Length: 163
Picture 1 (spheres, one colour):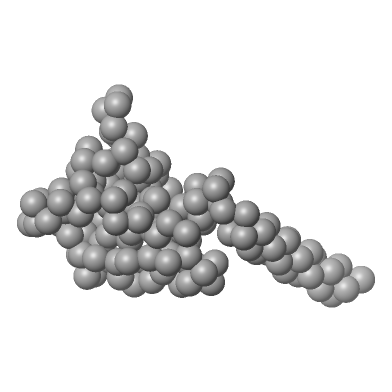
Picture 2 (picture 1 turned 135 degrees about the horizontal axis):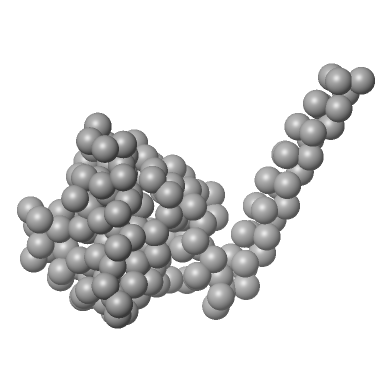
């Protein structure tokens, strides 16, 4: 199975990114996580992205706040799918990070999830990997069925309470 790389722009992003790591663990997807800054460690970030495919990665998740150029800078160095997670900061409620992540020039795509949307980044990476991994596809389908059942159970509880 291919791995997922989860790259944080700063250690302050871990509180949000932990949800992605937990989701990857739940789905039994191997991953590595590192802190690389598009601005403070550009050489290390570039080297990681350039070597990611040959090291067995199939998807890169990049989480960053404020200027949030991490996902784009990684995407420019690899043909692997890159999923950006804009992180909410005290500045502009994360809109700066969202726009920095989503507004990529033609030719360098970055899939972007919601501000602080780490779980969806993990799930999207799982869906990408599941295209060539039947076991993972089954685990994703089971997770979706379980989520559906949880919502339906809440509806049943509401109906009982209202009657």
